[in-house]
Length: 201
Image (tube, rainbow, N blue to C red):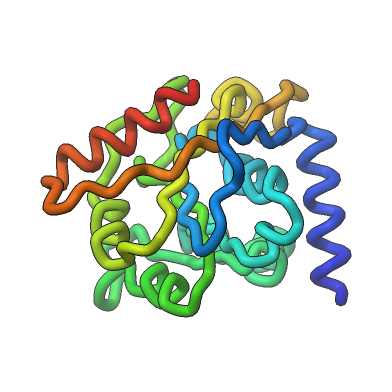
């Protein structure tokens, strides 16, 4: 119950700060989704999660870096109790096994996820080259809806290093699920996935 109120408050604060208005270019996909987006701010996850309708938000978890989000205090509470984040280990020296295993387990359990395929934030308006994790997940879960998302102003509202966001209005643009192509090479798939996000810019 406490987490429900905390989630509502978090959505309200996010919308107050940056708007996070959903702009669906097609009807929201039914079923399990993997939302993949450009990444320029620590607010990206909250903006996408807040932009989803409550029913979609309830079944959607964020994939987040353990070294940033798994901290004592408010940040850890938001990650673990409110967002129910799937935490992955980015630091090689801390890894024990496949870093994508928590993500794979969440997908096996039927959760929808928010993923940033660049792997880290960038100050640029357009996403950098996508890493291979998205391809692995797409291959492992062929029924998963791969939904491109573009965040249009957060690279200016809260760029890397900024302690608080500037009140710039952000649209969260959701595109059509990425079409599947049998036996598509990894690099071609990743280029096509990135192009689907760029097309929403």
